[in-house]
Length: 410
Ligand code: PMP
Image (cartoon, rainbow, N blue to C red):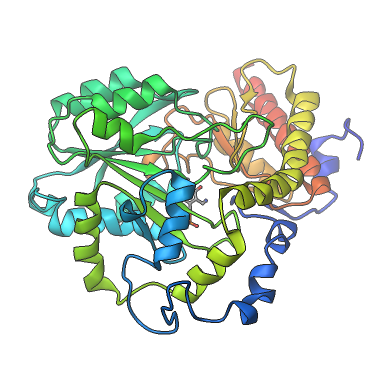
């Protein structure tokens, strides 16, 4: 495809490309086909003789909690191996907070107001949970090394209604930010007006490197314990983008008090997780080294896609003032910044040209990007060729939007 194509010429190609969500490509899912193919030989008896076909073990199969412990770097007693979705665990933890309160605290629903800090741009589904549960969202800026800690510290020190903050500490969705050691220590140490304040620590991209440098997620549980706030962090992770998206195992890691709290409330909600899937995952993933080898194969599929997007954007937008984008070292997303006021129009024009992007504003609480300048691009699922075309559509759409703006000003 010629790089010099106009917007109208591109539109005339009548393409249809979906860049909305960070789903793994089929080739990535194929990497774990053994999970299905080896299922008959795995059977239903766990290492300890547990019949995984039956109810029970609300905190998860012991060997799958041990695998979680190895993957997350915490003791197995502090890990819950759960169902197929970490987002579900985050939702439930917040719902339990609203309905019952955190260990030792009052139910949040009894307070006049409950608020959460939301580093922006952030993950739209975190914000959707807050919105659904009536939790007021307060946006704080996200920097390359984590949230703006001056702002975070000032807000949480002053307002007891602020009960928590969303954190995606490694290869953040959607900017790729990597929380620095300093930021993590400040989050662990900071005085909060709410005694039951929580870090919702979503470690979704803990294993999802895109470069030779394997950044490590900071150990927030230890940092909090050292700072005298052992119950402050709830750590969430899953194998959704390791094995099957929505078909893996999710994990929660936290202090013993938080795990007991979780068990109390979750034990009302379920008689236990799908231990057959947990058993299959333990046999397939085995240990951290095996998982890391699998993630290298994911990277071999993903990295060329991120590189192709970056190269296309560089070729077509490199000379446009006020336009920038991230080149993440891991995770599933690229953030592109337009000059103020052009994100919505760019998404609209791209859709008209056959490329559907995440709606502008989606990465902000209440879907409101105050500067209308952020686009979230998800290059994982489409083919390499489609990504080049999508990059071209974004560039041509943004240039057209800027031309329209310049004409209006003339
Ligand atoms: N957290 C983040 C930051 C994500 O990007 C995603 C997937 N897009 C999830 C959680 C969802 O994880 P799960 O499949 O375990 O629910």
